[in-house]
Length: 289
Length: 302
Image (tube, rainbow over all chains, first blue to last red; front, side, top):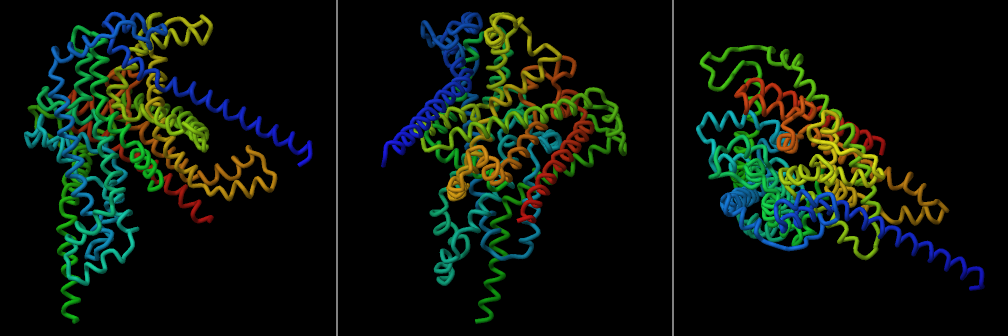
C-alpha cells in the first residue's frame, strides 16, 4: 500500500466516522422528541398538581425538583384504581388466553386437516380480516343491549375471542411446518387433536407469542367498545377510566399523570421484557398483509 | 384397508368441524351477524326508546346522511386526515427505519424508544397531549413553538380553534403511530438481500441511486401495506377526538366513527348509526381492494 492509497482509506474511514456520529446525534434528537411526552407524564406524576401545568413551558417539565408520591395516593383515594386495573387485566387476559386456544385450533384445522367446506370457510375468514371493530360496534351494541348484557364482563370478553386475523396467523404458520411432524403420530393412530396438542403446539411458540402480544396490545388500548357497553365503574377498564377520571372535578393534573403512569406500566413492562417478540409480531403483520 | 381410509377421511371432517366450531361460531355471532344486522337496520328508522314502531325506510337514512352537514364534515375530516397523515407518517417511518438499519451499537435502544408510544392507549395519549396543548403561554406546545419561531408565535388554544384542532389531533396520531410503521418497514428493509447492494456498489452506484433503484422497489409491497393500514386507521379515528374535542369545535374534528357513535350511542338512533357503519365499511373495502390490486399488479409483472 503506497501513501496515496492509505490517505484515501483514512479519508473514507473518517467520512464513515462522521456519518456515524451524525446518525447518532440525529437519532438522539429524534428520540428525545418521541420520549418527551412520556417523560412529561412521569415527571408530572411526581409533582404537586399546580406545578404540572405552570412548569410545562419550561425545562422543569422534564426535571422534577421535589419528588413526591402524593398524586399516586390521591388517585387511590379518589377512585377505585385497583378495580379498573383488575378489570383490564381480567378482560384482556381472558380474551388472549381463550383466543389462543380457539383460534389456534381453527388455524390448525384449516392448515393441516382435510374436510368438507374447508376452502370456502377459509376464504370467508380471510375476507373477514378486513373488518375492524368499528365496522360492527354499533350493531354489536344493539345486540348486547337487546340481550340485556350491557355493563358486563361477558360483553367485553366474548365478542373478541374469535379473531379472523389470529386464525390467519396460526393458519399460515402451521401450513409452513414440515409435514413429517405429524406423520409419525398419524401412523400411530393418534387423533388430530392429540397430534395438535402434543406435537404441533410445542414447536409453535413463535406464533403463539405473536398472536398473544398482538391481541394483548390491541385489546389493552381499546376505548370504543368499553365506552359504549359499560355504564358504571364496576366493569370499566383502564382506558375508559382515565377518560372519565380526567373529567372528574377537581381537575388535578398531577393525579391524572400518575393515573396514566400506573395505567401504562403493565404493558410497558411487558413490552420491555418481551421486546423481541413485540417487534417480531408487529413486523409479521407487514409480511402477511 | 380401504375401509380404514374412508373412516380416516370422515374422522378428519368431524374432528375438524369440532376444532373450528368455537372460532367460527364466534366469528359468525360477533362479526357476520352484527354486520348483517347493520345492513338491515340501516334500511329502517330504528331509534331505541322511541314509542313509535320501527318502519322500513329504504334508502332514507343514506339520503339523509348525504345532506347531513356534520356527516359530510366528518368524511372531509377523515379524508384530510388520511391525505396528511399517510405521507408524513410513512416518510417519517421510512426515514427512521433507514437510520436504524445499520449494524451500529444502540440501534435496538433507539428502536425501543421510537416504538414506546405505540403501546400507549390512545385514551392516555389524548390525555397527555391535552395538557401539552394547554392554551396560554404556559402550555408546552405554545412554549415550544415560541422557541422555534424565536418569539413570533402567539399562544393558541389548539383544541378549541377551528383551524388548529384537526392538525393538533394529527400530530399526536403521528406520534403514537410512527413506531408501528417503522418496525414494519425496518423488517422489510432487513429482508432485502445485501448481495443486491454489493453488486450495485461494485458497479459504482452511489447511495442515492442504490436507494432509488434497490431499496424503494424492494420495499414496494411493504410500503403499500403501510399506506393501506395508515389510511384505514385514519378512517377509524375515534378515541382522540372523542376525548379531546368531542368532534368540535363546530365539527372541526368530527370523524365518521364519531358521528356513528353520536348517532347510535348518544342519540340512540340505531338506524342512522348503522348506516354510517355500512358506509365506513364500504370505504375500508375500497381501500383494501385498491391495495390488493396494486400488490397483484406487481406480482403479475414479476
